[in-house]
Image 1 (cartoon, rainbow, N blue to C red):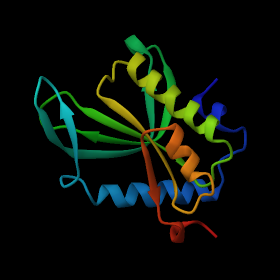
Image 2: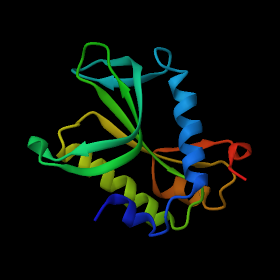
Image 3: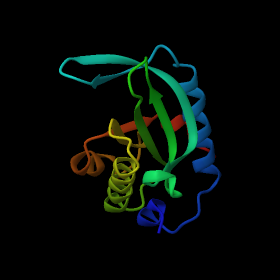
Length: 151
């Protein structure tokens, strides 16, 4: 079972595709400028964004196949081991618990795949009626302006 099955069995529609494309375009414009604070030894370091990858595959240890996909991966590196932010995009939250489980599953898959410096972001539109509940139940939430929603 893929992590997406934990959120909802509904197929991704054009709303998801547009949201993903808008997110990718925006962050590709931030390469070299946006940073992520990473602690490699003892001091936090601001590490620059270096790549933005749509539909990022997460492999099992030993490259034994793909165990998950993240909607978008933001890769940060500057000579240290890379750090990642995996972003799960939802044009509309159908079930908050399902989205939280999906993010936790991606987090677990990343750790199992050897990507230790990774966090998973749930990204929804800023007018989603379940946004406040998501923020109560999950610590990493970003929003996109509702004006970008597909018609």
